[in-house]
Length: 125
Image (cartoon, rainbow, N blue to C red):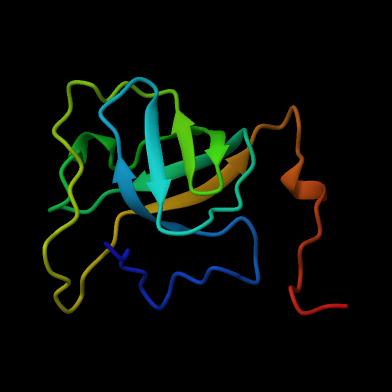
């Protein structure tokens, strides 16, 4: 199955860390979140989850916390989702459709790793 990647979800955004579209959320503890392409996050980035109606797992909407990076497209958060309704991708993408998103909002101030990395711009030589 080819993942749906909306045109506004740029794999190489100018500003880092950037919003990413959620492809899947597990019913586990800790919760495992999968993005549609490489998220480029680092462990201890603090993210907020935006889960619109129609995706299930509505209890996670607007939840935030630090992440632990597992792979280029997955990370965990210290949230127990074992008893929540499952996350599902809607079968169609109507006009005005809102994707489930991960939005970076902060970083653990004990490390500040991302704040010291200059990744702008990608085309610089």
